[in-house]
Image (cartoon, rainbow, N blue to C red; front, side):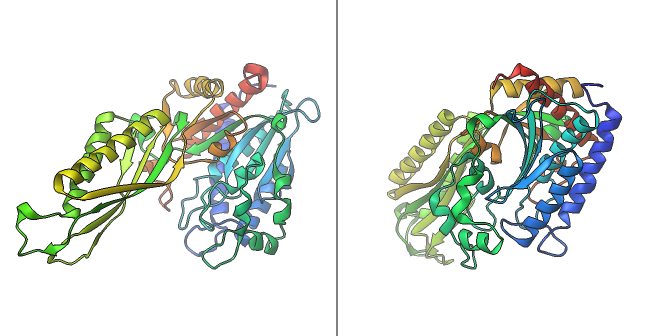
Length: 422
C-alpha cells in the first residue's frame, strides 16, 4: 500500500476525467453548445451520471434538498468528520466543459484511488457537485453551496427566472420541496475543511509556464452605477470653452480608472464595462453619461481605498467641468481569504509534483466563498489555455490534470493525517 499515487496511475485518472468531462458536456439543453442550468432536466441527468461515477469509486451517494449531488467515502471510524471536495456542475450559457466539472471529476478520482488501494483515512472524504454556482437561470448565485451552509436567504424561493417560474415552483416541478431547504444544511462539526480544484480562468499560470497554482484569496468585488450629469447643447453653436460635456468627463474619468488601478499594482483590477449617454445624437453634446464600475481585489482594505480614490477623482473631474457626479454601489462581496494551513498543504503538494509552487488570487467567484462562511477553505488552480473560460474554447491538458490529481491527493492525505486539526 502506497500513500502516493504514481504518475502512471495519475495519467490514467486524468484520461478518465477528460473523457467524463466530454460525457457531461453532452448533457446540455442546447444542441451544439453546453448550457446546463439549475433545476433543469439536464441538471438532474448530470447528477445521476455523477452519482454513478461516485458509486463506482466506492462512495455512498445522495441528492440533498437543494439539488446538490453528494458522495461519501467513510473514514477509519463511522461518522467521522469529513474533508469536503468538489465544485459545481451547472454552467453559463454556451459554456466550456471544465469550469466546475473538472473539480468534481478530479475529486472522484482521488477517492477512487483511495478505494482501489483500500486506504481508509482518519476522516471521511465527501465529494459534492454543487447545483448552482453560476446563477445563470435565476440571477442569484451559490444556491448549492449556500444550501449546505444553512445560509440560503428565505426570499430566494420566490425569485423568478426569465419566464416567471420561481425557484420554489421549479423545485416542485423537479421533485424537490422548497419547504425542506433547511435540511440540506450540514452541522459545523461534520466538515473540517473544503478543498476545491478549479481551472484558473486567467492567464497567469500559462504565462509562468506552470500547470498548477495555489489560491491565496478569492477577490472581493464592488459594482457601482455611476453618472456624470452636464448640459446637452448644439454641437455646432456651443463653444468648446462653454461646454458641460458629460461624455467627455466620463472619458477622462475612464482613463483615470485605468491608470490609477495600474499604478496601485496587481492584483487590483477595475473595469468600466458599460457606458450610455443622452440624448445620444451625433450633433448634440451629451448632457448625461451613465457608466458601470467593477472593481476587484483579494483584500478588502486596498479594495475600499481604490474605490474611494476613483470616486473622489470623479467628483474632481465633475467640479472642474461644472458637472455633477454620482455613484451608487449596488453589489458588494467581501474578499475570501484561503485558510493558511490548508493553503500550505496545497503549496507543499504542488512544490513536490511540479518543482515549485506559485501563489495567486482568484479573480472569479467560487463555491468556496459560501463555504468559507462556515469552514476553512483552500483552492488549487489548473492552467487553462489562453486563460479562456465561460467559452467553448475552454481547454486543459491531460498532463496538467494528472499533475493536479497528484497534488490534490497529496494535500488531502496531509490534511487528513492531522496537519490541520480542524
